[in-house]
Length: 456
Image 1 (cartoon, rainbow, N blue to C red):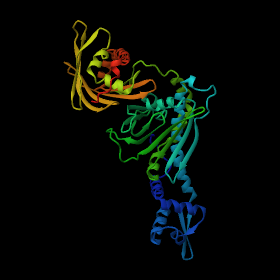
Image 2 (image 1 turned 30 degrees about the vertical axis):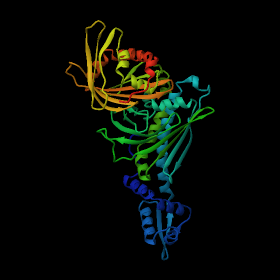
Image 3 (image 1 turned 60 degrees about the vertical axis):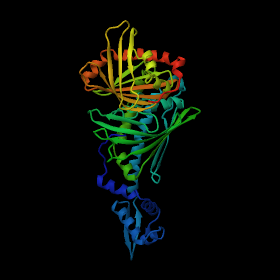
Image 4 (image 1 turned 90 degrees about the vertical axis):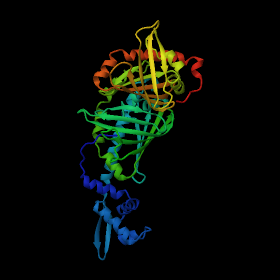
């Protein structure tokens, strides 16, 4: 996903060129006439179609400037236009540039793990680029001095992915990241002037830590997919090497017209900015917290993301959020509190109610809400409102992602406004959540927590 800027080519000229090249027969005519001129009759002999049909193909190519046609007696000589083909290649080069920017910043992220890297750093991670106009694919190969598990983690942890996915001046913020077939990710890239450009991934295949495949598309201002802009199917392959990991990223385009829409959006400038800021990115990533303590990140005026690595499997962590007996053992906040009411929502549309009080009674409070979505054992969406308080409910989106040695728990909370967000954070919410999550790890270490997961 990239940021739209001005282009040197006329919109009408570019549209005509890529519509013409979207047809396989027309691409073959261009290829042949670039090597040697031919008459329309000679071309017609090569295809299983009428002379008139070939004439129409040549007319489309001529209108797009991809071939020229000159009279020679009673015949018409067709010649390919190499300048027009170079323009198409230029657009592919721009798309390559944004991928180089992303890969360079991923390399910077992995640089924050010095024990996993050799003493001599690779000069550039990108080792090969292959553009195939016939297959409509762009393949980027990059090598990293880190294990496949570590590189996989960079793509599947939204906190790390957003550090290299958007251009340096348009950083990405992921508000959803479901690493599973049928899952969905949503993100926005925000520019220096506050302009925002939304995108999404639809996850179609996941084989951790070897590969995953997504469909990448644009979001409109309303948060829904923008069907006027193209989608791109992308496959990411992670292979171990003697020096670390080779990542092969292949982008599949539906047509050259779609390719033009994507590459004519300013990738070259984004690459220049990335290269100019590599040192700053490295310095910032050196302090990236890799510990397990819960951390809160403000995503927008209304959203906060709380993340924590939990020692335990995804299935165990899911069960601990849906089994009332287990919840009473860990979902307590600071020491000295009990949970006398724990009514769990058992199906979508159902309600839940949780109440706490100090040991011995007193200071009782609680929350209630509705279960809106449930995809065991990786995602749940609920509303949450404080009992007895006349305030808008929040929207809580819980995502569980497998990680080496545990589970990445991500909770995105959406508030009604910035004032409500700040007031809740000021209560010490994150500290209380960390106390509960640390207690959860102890509960998960017990035999009782290892029983089969109950699907809700």
